[in-house]
Image (tube, rainbow, N blue to C red):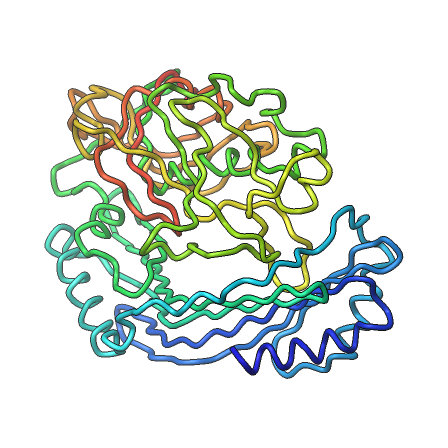
Length: 434
């Protein structure tokens, strides 16, 4: 990262006469990729470098960012313009330098375009055993991300990590229309475990004569980890210190109180090995820490960056995240939900009867800040006595996330990766289905 630090120092020098405090971030990405489809495979490779500048001027906070070759003075000019309408700073940039994290040993060299093609071809063949007419489309990108931060107060730090991003889509023609299933996850230096990918993208076998049926009303609903991830988006929003500072979080004044079911423990784990969102410090240079957000359903507290902590008379939890050219906001890293210690993987047997939601097509009409949701789930699956017997087309679920997560029937026994999270199946009761 020496080149990043040198360029970052040049940007800080350009800020000296126009800003009281300035911070530079540098991002470098090197990657290979393979696009896989029914007819061909397309290999790729690339490298990108990006620069972000954040500074205080006249008590206001400004940001800007650029990818590619950088002109320090152009970046400074853009940030000055951002300061004119930016928020009040309210905090000082950290001054303690970090011992830059040594790059972890990884197995990226073992991943080649040929090995990825073989992996996806094997996955396609396994899918066709279950659904002979199914087609797999996928994109896998693997490489190394490096991040460096330095500011005018003396902070200096960097880290590098391996990242493997995998996106899968399965299309299945049936007598009842075209079915699609999608799955996205990130790991850190190895291809996804194939058996777990199959669990997420292979839909119930329609050769068994599933029938179309109706099941409107208030029902038990089992969410796959992919669908559960969508349900948790409102929780990600609600635990943000930024939302608390704005007076809009439904969790205000709920710290230490029972909010979710006693069986739910939700953690944010930025130090979890093999998870792609793990980082030693956040985008402001504050050291990260593992946090239990809900323990046995009890809310333990909000996530803060420096600004929201200043607004709420709290301290930063090392949860700052931002894209180049954007202001910081508190974010989750690797969100995990503790699985059940016993029971089945998909919870159908314990639930008995209800519907299984494998994906969510859209989430229109809800409000992430309040927790209300309206999910268009497309095709869902009806099960009775723990066995899938039919499908329900055009299913819409509605309710409030905090309400439905207080009525947990049971959790699955295995955690699956969804994006950068680790989530089990979850069975919830009394959800409005139409």
